[in-house]
Every structure is written in structure tokens, then in C-alpha cells.
Length: 178
Image (cartoon, rainbow, N blue to C red; front, top):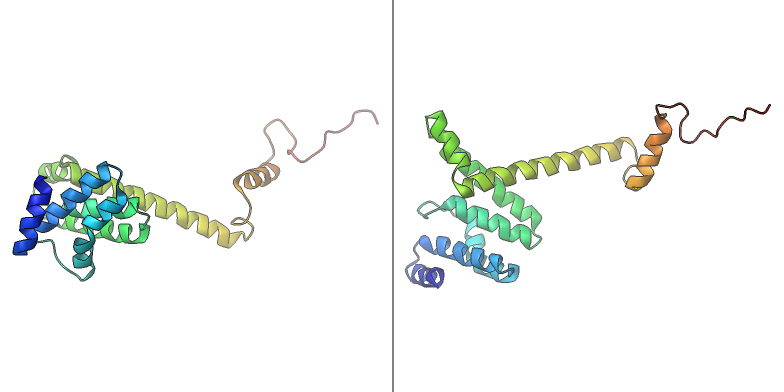
């Protein structure tokens, strides 16, 4: 109810806190499992960001961007979610760079929940991208790689690398009665 009142006031005055309120409403909807409702709450905010709008003057730009990322990812808009996460990560590190004390900078990145979540989501996204790149590279090097399934690749690998006890998996046993 508080987010709804704040959002209504923000809309009537065009104050930037309306973005904080919209993100709060979206987080509430997302917590209820209502991805569609969360997306609807962020429509104006996402349009503002897509048009190159800024979140300067909001209470928590990091939390707003993290919420946008989570809602977009939950709705299956993975490319747009990755773009928003990239913006969040860049803005977070720009702010962190202004903190001269190493200990305080570390606390800023690890102790504030939304900052910690942005860093974790960014790392997960980078790991997934690296894995996808590795798979794509393997597929380019070996055209059959992308077509065949995991169990087939495992069987092919087993045939190429003999087992420790002796023969490769595809070699029939040698008959001793000769």
C-alpha cells in the first residue's frame, strides 16, 4: 500500500521517486509470483531507461536496476535483462570507484544486499556466457558436437580415451583360445 501511494504521488508530480515506488511494487508482485504484474509495474520505468533516461535522483538506483533485471529475467526477456544487469554493474562499480578506502569499497560491494546481488548476478551471467562461448567454440571445431547429445559425446570420448585397465570401450575382448 505504501508503494502504491508513493507511486501515485510520484506520478502526479513527475518526481523521480516514482521509479523507486514502481520498483517496490514490482518486487512485491514478483514475491507473489506475479511476473506479469511485476512487468506491468515497470513498463514506464523500462521505457524511461530504453530512451536513455537516468536514475540520478532516485533513492536507490542499484535496487531499481536489480529489480528490473529480476523481473525481465523472470519473464524470459533474457537479452534485455542482461542489458539492464550490465548497466547496474557498471553504475555500481563507478560508484564503488569513488570510494577511496579499500575496506569501505569492499563493504559497499559485499554488505549492501542489492549491491551484493548485482555482483553475484553479474558473475553468474559471465560464467554462463563463458560456458556458452566454450560450447559454441567446440561446435565450430567439431560440427557434430552441436547435433549429438551429451550421452553420445560421452560415448565418443570413452572410445577415444582407453580405460585405465587396458582396452578401449569399443575393443572386443581377445580370445585366449587360439
